Amino acid sequence: MLLKQGPDLGIDENMCAQTFYMAINKESRMHLDGSARGSFLRLTAKVGIELLGKIAKNESLHKH
Image 1 (cartoon, rainbow, N blue to C red):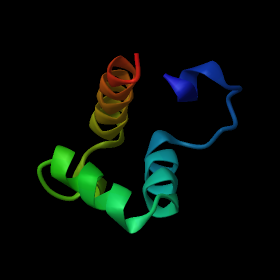
Image 2: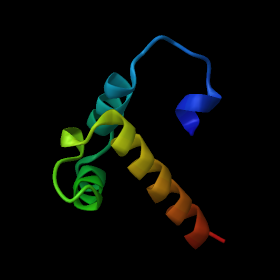
Image 3: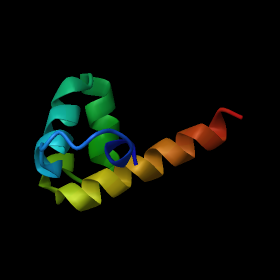
């Protein structure tokens, strides 16, 4: 969703997903890999971004 809200920078989804993964801390990577049932980086960009959306939606439900 966040990718769709911003301007088109010409960066493909694979690069965005990989950059995001490499930028988060080790603990967050472990949680993300667990949610992916393996390495997040093995997912297609589309599936990985959908997973991030589900995680974000779930987190927002717990904050209210």
